[in-house]
Length: 276
Image (cartoon, rainbow, N blue to C red; front, side, top):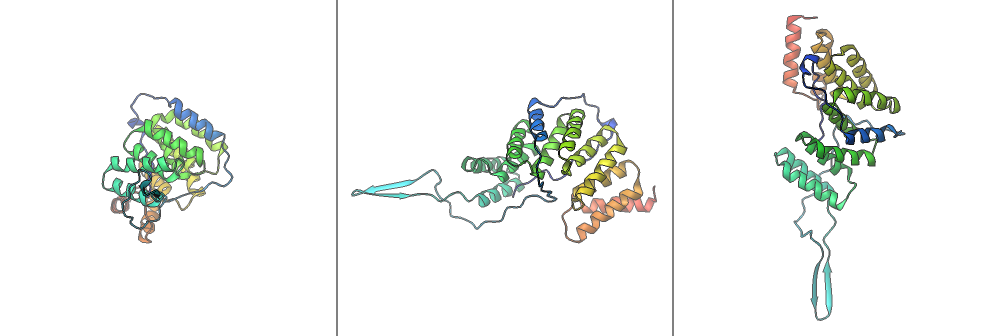
Protein backbone atom coordinates (compact mmCIF):
# COMPACT_ATOMS: atom_id res chain seq x y z
CA UNK A 1 0.00 0.00 0.00
CA UNK A 2 1.50 3.32 -0.97
CA UNK A 3 1.37 6.04 1.61
CA UNK A 4 0.58 9.48 0.23
CA UNK A 5 1.07 12.82 1.87
CA UNK A 6 -2.63 12.70 2.55
CA UNK A 7 -3.15 16.09 4.19
CA UNK A 8 -2.29 19.43 2.67
CA UNK A 9 -0.14 21.59 4.95
CA UNK A 10 -2.11 23.45 7.59
CA UNK A 11 -2.71 27.03 6.45
CA UNK A 12 -0.28 29.58 7.86
CA UNK A 13 -0.84 33.25 8.51
CA UNK A 14 1.23 35.82 6.66
CA UNK A 15 3.05 36.73 9.87
CA UNK A 16 4.32 33.17 10.06
CA UNK A 17 5.94 33.47 6.62
CA UNK A 18 9.05 35.28 7.85
CA UNK A 19 11.58 33.26 5.86
CA UNK A 20 13.25 34.89 2.84
CA UNK A 21 11.63 34.32 -0.51
CA UNK A 22 12.89 31.28 -2.37
CA UNK A 23 12.72 30.27 -5.98
CA UNK A 24 11.35 27.19 -7.66
CA UNK A 25 14.05 24.83 -8.80
CA UNK A 26 14.69 24.48 -12.52
CA UNK A 27 13.59 20.85 -12.24
CA UNK A 28 10.23 21.85 -10.75
CA UNK A 29 9.71 24.45 -13.46
CA UNK A 30 10.33 21.82 -16.12
CA UNK A 31 7.78 19.47 -14.58
CA UNK A 32 5.21 22.26 -14.40
CA UNK A 33 5.86 23.17 -18.03
CA UNK A 34 5.16 19.60 -19.08
CA UNK A 35 1.98 19.54 -17.02
CA UNK A 36 0.82 22.73 -18.70
CA UNK A 37 1.07 20.95 -22.04
CA UNK A 38 -1.04 18.04 -20.83
CA UNK A 39 -4.77 18.10 -21.43
CA UNK A 40 -6.12 14.89 -19.86
CA UNK A 41 -9.49 13.81 -21.16
CA UNK A 42 -10.80 12.03 -18.07
CA UNK A 43 -8.99 12.95 -14.87
CA UNK A 44 -9.48 10.63 -11.92
CA UNK A 45 -10.31 12.21 -8.59
CA UNK A 46 -9.07 10.08 -5.71
CA UNK A 47 -10.27 11.14 -2.30
CA UNK A 48 -8.49 8.20 -0.66
CA UNK A 49 -5.03 6.66 -0.95
CA UNK A 50 -4.32 4.00 -3.53
CA UNK A 51 -4.74 0.61 -1.89
CA UNK A 52 -2.85 -2.47 -3.02
CA UNK A 53 -4.62 -5.77 -2.71
CA UNK A 54 -3.00 -7.92 -0.01
CA UNK A 55 -1.16 -10.88 -1.49
CA UNK A 56 -0.65 -14.27 0.10
CA UNK A 57 2.65 -14.87 1.85
CA UNK A 58 5.27 -16.39 -0.39
CA UNK A 59 8.20 -18.62 0.40
CA UNK A 60 11.44 -16.68 0.09
CA UNK A 61 13.17 -17.56 -3.15
CA UNK A 62 16.53 -16.69 -4.58
CA UNK A 63 15.76 -13.77 -6.89
CA UNK A 64 19.30 -13.46 -8.22
CA UNK A 65 18.66 -15.38 -11.41
CA UNK A 66 18.35 -18.85 -12.81
CA UNK A 67 19.61 -21.87 -10.89
CA UNK A 68 21.27 -24.38 -13.22
CA UNK A 69 22.35 -27.96 -12.69
CA UNK A 70 24.11 -30.07 -15.25
CA UNK A 71 24.59 -33.85 -14.89
CA UNK A 72 25.32 -36.52 -17.50
CA UNK A 73 24.58 -34.10 -20.30
CA UNK A 74 21.21 -33.01 -18.90
CA UNK A 75 20.78 -29.32 -18.12
CA UNK A 76 18.08 -28.36 -15.68
CA UNK A 77 17.13 -24.70 -15.28
CA UNK A 78 14.92 -23.43 -12.50
CA UNK A 79 13.70 -19.93 -13.14
CA UNK A 80 12.49 -17.95 -10.14
CA UNK A 81 8.93 -16.70 -10.45
CA UNK A 82 8.26 -13.12 -11.43
CA UNK A 83 8.20 -10.67 -8.56
CA UNK A 84 4.82 -10.37 -6.87
CA UNK A 85 4.53 -6.60 -6.94
CA UNK A 86 1.48 -6.42 -4.69
CA UNK A 87 3.26 -8.45 -2.05
CA UNK A 88 6.40 -6.30 -2.26
CA UNK A 89 4.42 -3.05 -2.08
CA UNK A 90 2.59 -4.38 0.95
CA UNK A 91 5.94 -5.13 2.58
CA UNK A 92 7.11 -1.58 1.82
CA UNK A 93 3.99 -0.16 3.44
CA UNK A 94 4.45 -2.29 6.54
CA UNK A 95 8.06 -1.15 6.77
CA UNK A 96 6.96 2.48 6.63
CA UNK A 97 4.39 1.93 9.37
CA UNK A 98 7.12 0.35 11.50
CA UNK A 99 9.37 3.36 10.92
CA UNK A 100 11.80 1.37 8.76
CA UNK A 101 12.16 3.97 6.02
CA UNK A 102 15.38 2.56 4.58
CA UNK A 103 13.82 -0.87 4.15
CA UNK A 104 10.76 0.65 2.43
CA UNK A 105 12.97 2.64 0.07
CA UNK A 106 14.92 -0.51 -0.78
CA UNK A 107 11.75 -2.43 -1.59
CA UNK A 108 10.36 0.33 -3.79
CA UNK A 109 13.65 0.50 -5.67
CA UNK A 110 13.68 -3.27 -6.14
CA UNK A 111 10.15 -3.15 -7.56
CA UNK A 112 11.22 -0.41 -9.98
CA UNK A 113 14.27 -2.44 -11.00
CA UNK A 114 11.83 -5.13 -12.15
CA UNK A 115 9.09 -2.80 -13.43
CA UNK A 116 10.45 0.64 -14.28
CA UNK A 117 6.98 2.15 -14.79
CA UNK A 118 5.26 0.73 -11.71
CA UNK A 119 3.13 3.69 -10.68
CA UNK A 120 2.49 2.54 -7.13
CA UNK A 121 6.21 2.08 -6.49
CA UNK A 122 7.02 5.49 -8.01
CA UNK A 123 4.35 7.11 -5.87
CA UNK A 124 5.45 5.25 -2.75
CA UNK A 125 9.11 6.12 -3.25
CA UNK A 126 8.37 9.77 -4.05
CA UNK A 127 6.17 10.11 -0.99
CA UNK A 128 8.65 8.37 1.28
CA UNK A 129 11.40 10.75 0.21
CA UNK A 130 9.01 13.71 0.48
CA UNK A 131 7.96 12.90 4.02
CA UNK A 132 11.60 12.48 4.99
CA UNK A 133 12.35 15.99 3.68
CA UNK A 134 14.49 14.68 0.82
CA UNK A 135 12.88 16.95 -1.75
CA UNK A 136 15.63 16.59 -4.37
CA UNK A 137 15.06 12.83 -4.37
CA UNK A 138 11.26 13.07 -4.28
CA UNK A 139 10.96 15.52 -7.18
CA UNK A 140 12.25 13.24 -9.98
CA UNK A 141 10.04 10.41 -8.75
CA UNK A 142 6.96 12.63 -9.00
CA UNK A 143 8.17 13.74 -12.44
CA UNK A 144 8.40 10.13 -13.65
CA UNK A 145 4.98 9.29 -12.22
CA UNK A 146 3.25 12.30 -13.80
CA UNK A 147 4.99 11.68 -17.12
CA UNK A 148 3.49 8.18 -17.14
CA UNK A 149 0.13 9.11 -15.67
CA UNK A 150 -0.72 12.85 -15.75
CA UNK A 151 -4.18 11.92 -14.42
CA UNK A 152 -2.72 10.63 -11.15
CA UNK A 153 -4.43 12.99 -8.71
CA UNK A 154 -2.55 11.77 -5.61
CA UNK A 155 0.80 12.23 -7.32
CA UNK A 156 -0.22 15.64 -8.64
CA UNK A 157 -1.47 16.73 -5.21
CA UNK A 158 1.80 15.77 -3.53
CA UNK A 159 3.88 17.48 -6.21
CA UNK A 160 1.85 20.65 -5.71
CA UNK A 161 2.64 20.49 -2.00
CA UNK A 162 6.32 20.21 -2.94
CA UNK A 163 6.05 23.29 -5.15
CA UNK A 164 4.47 25.32 -2.37
CA UNK A 165 7.23 24.24 0.01
CA UNK A 166 9.87 25.43 -2.46
CA UNK A 167 8.46 28.87 -3.13
CA UNK A 168 4.85 29.81 -2.29
CA UNK A 169 4.90 32.98 -4.39
CA UNK A 170 6.27 31.42 -7.57
CA UNK A 171 4.26 28.25 -7.08
CA UNK A 172 1.10 30.35 -6.92
CA UNK A 173 1.82 31.98 -10.27
CA UNK A 174 2.53 28.63 -11.91
CA UNK A 175 -0.57 26.99 -10.45
CA UNK A 176 -2.81 29.83 -11.61
CA UNK A 177 -1.54 29.15 -15.14
CA UNK A 178 -1.93 25.41 -14.71
CA UNK A 179 -5.51 25.60 -13.45
CA UNK A 180 -6.50 27.40 -16.66
CA UNK A 181 -5.08 24.54 -18.70
CA UNK A 182 -6.49 21.76 -16.51
CA UNK A 183 -9.60 23.21 -14.85
CA UNK A 184 -10.94 19.74 -14.04
CA UNK A 185 -8.32 18.93 -11.37
CA UNK A 186 -9.69 19.78 -7.93
CA UNK A 187 -6.18 19.46 -6.42
CA UNK A 188 -5.14 22.64 -8.24
CA UNK A 189 -7.63 25.09 -6.70
CA UNK A 190 -7.19 23.32 -3.34
CA UNK A 191 -3.46 23.95 -3.32
CA UNK A 192 -3.93 27.49 -4.64
CA UNK A 193 -6.24 28.10 -1.67
CA UNK A 194 -3.62 26.86 0.79
CA UNK A 195 -0.96 29.13 -0.71
CA UNK A 196 -3.25 32.16 -0.70
CA UNK A 197 -3.95 31.48 2.98
CA UNK A 198 -0.25 31.21 3.76
CA UNK A 199 0.33 34.55 2.06
CA UNK A 200 -2.52 36.23 3.91
CA UNK A 201 -5.05 36.54 1.06
CA UNK A 202 -7.98 35.05 2.95
CA UNK A 203 -10.86 35.89 0.62
CA UNK A 204 -9.10 34.36 -2.36
CA UNK A 205 -8.18 31.33 -0.26
CA UNK A 206 -11.80 30.74 0.68
CA UNK A 207 -13.01 31.16 -2.88
CA UNK A 208 -10.57 28.60 -4.27
CA UNK A 209 -11.16 26.06 -1.52
CA UNK A 210 -14.92 26.29 -2.08
CA UNK A 211 -14.22 25.72 -5.76
CA UNK A 212 -12.21 22.58 -4.94
CA UNK A 213 -14.97 21.29 -2.65
CA UNK A 214 -17.55 21.89 -5.36
CA UNK A 215 -15.48 19.84 -7.80
CA UNK A 216 -14.83 16.99 -5.34
CA UNK A 217 -17.44 17.10 -2.56
CA UNK A 218 -16.39 13.67 -1.33
CA UNK A 219 -12.85 14.84 -0.56
CA UNK A 220 -12.76 15.30 3.21
CA UNK A 221 -9.24 16.74 3.17
CA UNK A 222 -10.56 19.81 1.37
CA UNK A 223 -13.32 20.22 3.95
CA UNK A 224 -10.82 19.80 6.78
CA UNK A 225 -8.51 22.46 5.36
CA UNK A 226 -11.45 24.76 4.71
CA UNK A 227 -12.56 24.37 8.33
CA UNK A 228 -9.09 25.42 9.48
CA UNK A 229 -9.13 28.40 7.15
CA UNK A 230 -12.50 29.55 8.46
CA UNK A 231 -11.41 28.99 12.05
CA UNK A 232 -8.25 31.07 11.62
CA UNK A 233 -10.29 33.84 10.03
CA UNK A 234 -12.57 33.84 13.10
CA UNK A 235 -15.51 32.67 11.04
CA UNK A 236 -16.41 30.30 13.86
CA UNK A 237 -19.97 29.47 12.92
CA UNK A 238 -18.98 28.36 9.42
CA UNK A 239 -15.94 26.51 10.77
CA UNK A 240 -18.14 24.69 13.27
CA UNK A 241 -20.39 23.49 10.47
CA UNK A 242 -17.39 22.06 8.62
CA UNK A 243 -16.16 20.38 11.80
CA UNK A 244 -19.59 18.81 12.32
CA UNK A 245 -19.56 17.41 8.79
CA UNK A 246 -16.16 15.83 9.44
CA UNK A 247 -17.30 14.27 12.70
CA UNK A 248 -20.42 12.90 11.03
CA UNK A 249 -18.26 11.39 8.29
CA UNK A 250 -16.08 9.74 10.94
CA UNK A 251 -19.17 8.33 12.64
CA UNK A 252 -20.16 6.77 9.31
CA UNK A 253 -16.82 4.99 9.26
CA UNK A 254 -15.11 7.25 6.75
CA UNK A 255 -11.43 8.05 7.19
CA UNK A 256 -10.96 11.74 7.88
CA UNK A 257 -7.81 13.85 7.97
CA UNK A 258 -6.82 15.08 11.40
CA UNK A 259 -7.65 13.70 14.81
CA UNK A 260 -11.39 13.33 15.39
CA UNK A 261 -11.00 13.90 19.15
CA UNK A 262 -9.19 17.18 18.57
CA UNK A 263 -11.79 18.23 16.01
CA UNK A 264 -14.53 17.49 18.55
CA UNK A 265 -12.67 19.46 21.24
CA UNK A 266 -12.34 22.44 18.93
CA UNK A 267 -16.01 22.25 17.98
CA UNK A 268 -17.00 22.09 21.67
CA UNK A 269 -14.82 25.11 22.44
CA UNK A 270 -16.31 27.14 19.61
CA UNK A 271 -19.87 26.18 20.52
CA UNK A 272 -19.47 26.81 24.27
CA UNK A 273 -18.00 30.25 23.70
CA UNK A 274 -20.61 31.15 21.07
CA UNK A 275 -18.04 33.06 19.07
CA UNK A 276 -18.93 34.47 15.69
